[in-house]
Length: 251
Image (cartoon, rainbow, N blue to C red):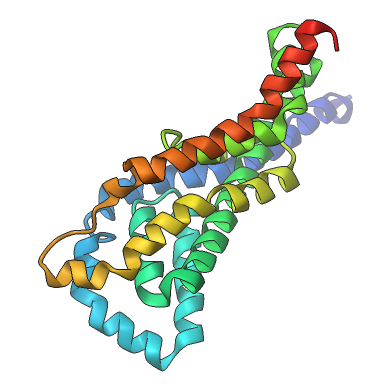
């Protein structure tokens, strides 16, 4: 009798432990993000890059592959745990490795970090919310159906519109059941324009430091930069617009 009554309790305890384990990765990321904001924002900065640029260049010249690997690992960590300094890392990539190699390293690292956040969120909150959306026939169900029909376009919009924070663009797709493959390749392609801008700033950052100035990240909002980005965003949204118009006309 005691064994029979304990079986449901044991099963419930096992389910609770599994649920806790699924939420643990995202919880760790959120805790690390808060702690990083409080403790690291004064260390991962352009001042730190300026003060250590000669040592970094010397290490790059002596151990290029080691430096590239260390840079990748550091950047992935910054993105995966939403630590402050992603912009500094992108500029550093251009400063150390030039426009071509720096852009590749920046895109690879940022994409890998984004995928880690996506997987952590999908394992916990994302799984529960996606299941609820699949079971719902109301508003949530319509949102899910609309997202399924326009998944790639929405993902590109999240990457191409500069006003969308990178963390939000990583977290939101996981919470609504986006496919991992679609998230990965749209992230890699969608962040290339912004990566090119930040990396190009890094290529000339040495001269900026020599003038006693700080890198001007407002370049991202300059008309000749924001214009093409918004144009790409409009192209990404075009399939959704066409699909909506066809739906209204019954085509």
